[in-house]
Image (cartoon, rainbow, N blue to C red; front, top):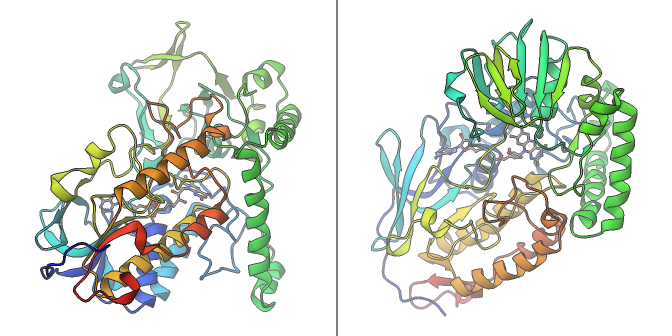
Length: 502
Ligand SMILES: Cc1cc2nc3c(=O)[nH]c(=O)nc-3n(C[C@H](O)[C@H](O)[C@H](O)COP(=O)(O)OP(=O)(O)OC[C@H]3O[C@@H](n4cnc5c(N)ncnc54)[C@H](O)[C@@H]3O)c2cc1C
């Protein structure tokens, strides 16, 4: 059933997009291709790129093969390696923006702080950090789930006399030669940073709370011949991409509860650890004692090997405090340092944390999500009409390319925007009961997965709720979101209602 109709006010824009990472870029390209003219991408930084603009630490690269970690509609035969470095991914994104003519739509230095749904006019009132305001009939968030750095809560952090920074805030002019460096964290960034800087520094101390499960990355460069073949043979690259996709998708079986498969993967990882680390005590300290997959599985060809170097040490004692001179661990030892790198990840569990999104009735998303974020397919939230998210709650992955999810969401949102801009609807809002049923099912599914097998991971918030991961196959997400069902939404339409929306 449709809501009663009253005419909308006139908004400056049809669509406002927040963020110019892979998400913002993907929806902007889709809108451009579909002939939309009145849209803008508000990006708080001074360039596009998101993750791949911000993360400039040595060794930064994707951990999903590049031929899959890229847009399906813009395949690149020239990837230099299986897992291309960050600057190359960033260049790819810029080339996409140029090729699809997105640049005129980009507004840099434009951090959105507030977006308030104006119920009388049925549009979003958007405020930027610089005080500028605009209005848009639809609002799309592409602000990223791994965007806001998470700093550890350690006593005395501010007392350190040396240089301390987060891995996502790396200064490329920084020279670590001869320094005594401490790295805090054992996640995806740390395992790329440690081997990349180990040979340069005087000493590297890795402070580990929990060891990661690590598998070999098997990274290799593509020869000129391979690149030529990708370019020349029709369908070869698509075939290669599909093969990579299916291989990764199979791994979901393990994450979703096939313990036997995961035990086999554990064996592989332990074998790799055994072969790679020479010192038995270090090997033991690097051995995880939780189910593989519960935390993100990491891949590296040189992380373990770095611990064979005489200038690299592993500290497993908990950190007690930071002093002027370095890090003091619980056993009272002072580890003297002149540089501390916080490889402590991102505030993944606080999506849209820096934004004040106000929906119907003056309700804020921050309040709505105070016990954990939830949405409908991670895309829409009841009470926030004409608002769409890319990589919203429960659409992160532990096993495959997130760009696949972004593309599925863009297709879904494009359909919804079609209702608004092609079929005359003025407002669409997912039904609360539909969203509730969806999340009950999702929670039940989640409980059977490896992510709920008992470890402490960044996927879980302090209440133990997982609002990060999609607990299923990406193929099933793609299938379920191939077209939005109008019955899931309250749709305000002029009378008489267009048949597709009735
Ligand atoms: C080091 C690293 C490696 C990764 N490797 C992989 C990988 O191999 N495979 C994989 O699938 N995923 C990987 N990821 C996850 C990665 O974040 C996603 O793949 C993808 O880049 C997300 O794109 P996005 O556009 O949604 O977010 P982001 O890339 O985070 O972009 C968000 C953009 O929004 C902007 N923004 C934020 N807030 C505002 C605001 N209020 N107003 C305006 N603009 C705003 C930001 O400045 C940023 O440019 C990795 C993440 C990191 C950090």
